[in-house]
Image (cartoon, rainbow over the protein chains, first blue to last red):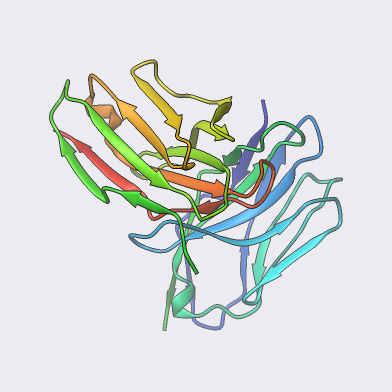
Length: 113
Length: 112
């Protein structure tokens, strides 16, 4: 079945450092791809999405590009802030059907001053 | 803006008891999804409803059942609770299936 694999954490960075969190997927069709963020004690918030190959999703300085040839959707940010500390989930939604989300294991990011 | 409401936010039960979790979608949203997130794990899809009919089913135990009512709110009923059912249960809603899902804050269930 479809699946998502993302890099293990925790990732610890200094403020203003460059962030990359790797995400690859396996899917039979043409899924939509998402990054969700979960702050401590809160629910999941959609960070960005891409629905077809070569689309770039971006929000709050975060970016990810849907790469069909490498089945990847890596999350990047040029300069992280302490407030970015959270758990980041890569997810896919299968093409067709009723679009349940399949999540990766999550990557915890800790940014220190 | 109105968000997805889940109640209760926290619930403590004993083994073999039953629990009912409620989800109130964003107004006009007709699709509801339930996910279970175990400690330190990724959310796992349980079940979804579109226009009050079950639309998809995931790894939901037979001890669990759910439904969507005429006002589009949904309830997840859990019976014969086990220690392993301790988790954060998220509800998400969307306008039409296949569109962006908006997540509620979750219900944290602890089974003792």
